[in-house]
Image (tube, rainbow, N blue to C red):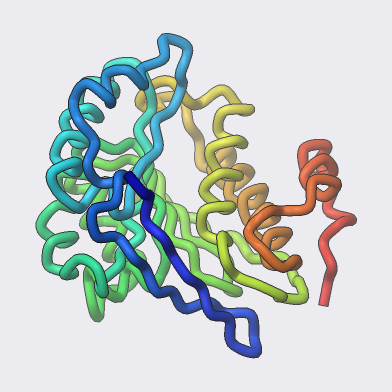
Length: 240
């Protein structure tokens, strides 16, 4: 059974638009048995989102899996709204349940505009905190990211970079965020010891990872740059 195919077209600024082919794809037809087989006793975080979480029959099964898994792991969700494939109303209906399941909600300002049109990022964070999620991070493209931990907020800037290709920028940000939170010892539970200082640290690291991704063609950050980021530097960022 094939997985969903996404075809990206880049404009002259490196911004991507997507066409997806998802009919009868495997990534939204998970069974309970398949999900149970993915459980790992040493896992610290479970991240999911997009079509796998919204399309049926697999979406509801993944929600049930998250409800059981969160007893042992931190849960991270990226809605990654795709209105050409699934009506936005379906995301709006499911999002409160996702917030109740998740410890971390990471989404883009484009997602926000679709989910809560006319709502400011700060108001959206408060809405989602009220639904249960502790850490909300909204990426703002070249303007950086807004992070809100239980209603206490910080904005981190994006590094200056020559944008070649934005494909994978959001996923790279999320990967960097989760990596840094793990390195700081915060994954594996309900983020009980997480501070705004560590949120800032993790988001700044994530922004650098996303910037590296945008600096090259394709969605793979240059490995040399990642090695430097892990050591605390940023000399591999191609600054404007």
